Amino acid sequence: MARAEMSADEYQAGARRLTPAERVRAAEQIRLEREAAARAEREREAEAAATRRAAEAALAARPLGVRLVEARCGGCHARDYFERQRFGYAGWWATVVRMQVVNGAVLGPGERGPIVAHLAATYPASPVGEALEWALVGAVAIGSVAAPWWILRRRRRRGAPGEQLGALPATRGPQTFLGSSE
Image (cartoon, rainbow, N blue to C red; front, side):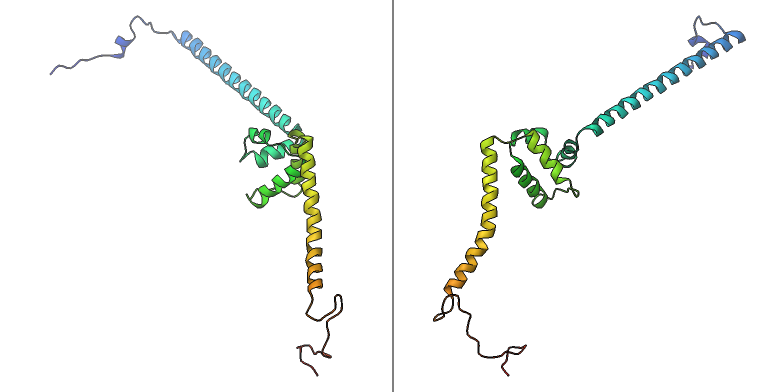
């Protein structure tokens, strides 16, 4: 079995040995290059940090409604969702309430108003659509008052057989707390 014996000198073909002074100069050159690379890296990091701070400041300078819509609604809805929806103030308010009640959207105290105001201003309904929304709100308001009134009126008109309308029911005498007569 043959063994090849090789030394590191064979890999350094034509390379000459450095004198001690040349070694010092080469080491100094390497140190300067490392310092320049480290300085360039620090400058890149500082520039990236400044860019990041400027972007954060630009985000913070935007209106509250924009930031809230992105933070609270943007997790589930893409931007084109809002562009496809066109509601007035009442419609956006109902949509946000529905998202809270039905879908479990979490809004902090006082966040619904700025969100609805931003959506209504940015993605408004047509004038006819907004008029229909407010007509619906009015109908619901009138219905919520009229329905109980109508039910009470019907109950009073029916009354017991033989009783006059509007008359108080006849009593059998004084009643005790448990309902028995004395």
